[in-house]
Length: 228
Image (cartoon, one colour):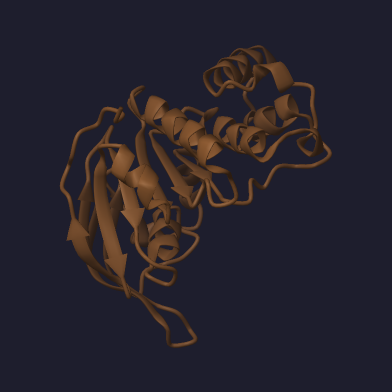
C-alpha cells in the first residue's frame, strides 16, 4: 500500500523536515505516527497526497511511485485518499448532509447514489441526527465526525488523519479514535498523526515515532483490534 524508500524533504527555507525515511505500511492496517512538534509528522502525511513533493527518494502509494505522477494523475490519487485535519475545514454555509455530499457532487456521482452513500457514512460516524444542521450548530466532536464522514464518503482505500483530535476533550478524542478504528476494520488503511500518548497507549496499534525528521522507533505491525 505505502512504501517510503530513502525519502527526504527539505523546504525552500532550508529546513530539513524528513531525513532518509524508509517505511512500509500494509493495506488494511492502522498506524499511529507520533513525535514532538517539528518532528516531521505533518510533512510525511502531506507527501502521501502530494501536497508536498519529496526532495529525494521514492514514495509508493497504490503501487505507483507518486513522485513521478503527472499533474493530470494527481486528482486520481487524491480521490483514493481521504484526509482529516485538526481544524475540520467544513463549509460553513452548507449543512452536514451538503458538506458530505459536496465531494460526490464534484466527482459527478448520480444523486441516487449520493443519497445512499451519504446516509451510510453519516450512520457509520454517528452524526445522521444532525444532517440538517450547519457547522456552527455542532460541537467540536460532531464537526470532526462530519469531517471523517466527508473523508470516507468516496470509499477511499487510504485515510490520513493529521492531529484529528488536537482541539477535542479526552472523551470526545476517544470517540473519534474508536471511529477511526471502526473504519479501519472495514478494510481502509488508516494513518493517524497525534500528540496524544494516552490514546496511543490505550489502542494496541503499530506506532512509528519521528524525531527531527527521522524514524527513531517503530513498534511493528502490532495488533489491529481496539484496546480495552
